[in-house]
View (cartoon, rainbow, N blue to C red):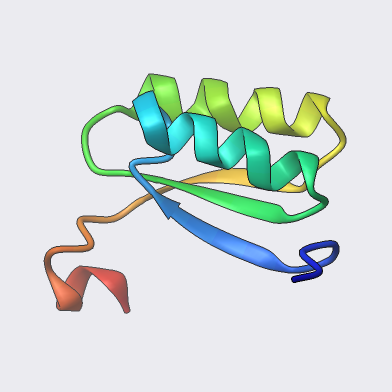
Amino acid sequence: MELQGKAALMTGGGTGLGRAISLALARQGMAVAVNYSRSEAEAHATAAELQALGAQALAVQADVRDEARCG
């Protein structure tokens, strides 16, 4: 599947496995929204790292367990 030019919302994207997946997606040319509920500093650091790779990236706070907070 061609990922170049597509976008992903990566829940838990600032730490651990989510961070690793965010980096892999960015290396494939995807824009990545790094979602966090508690790990704000880590999410912003990951977004900055993705941007340094040339990807469009931003950190977004939302508790995806609560549909009302995602709208």
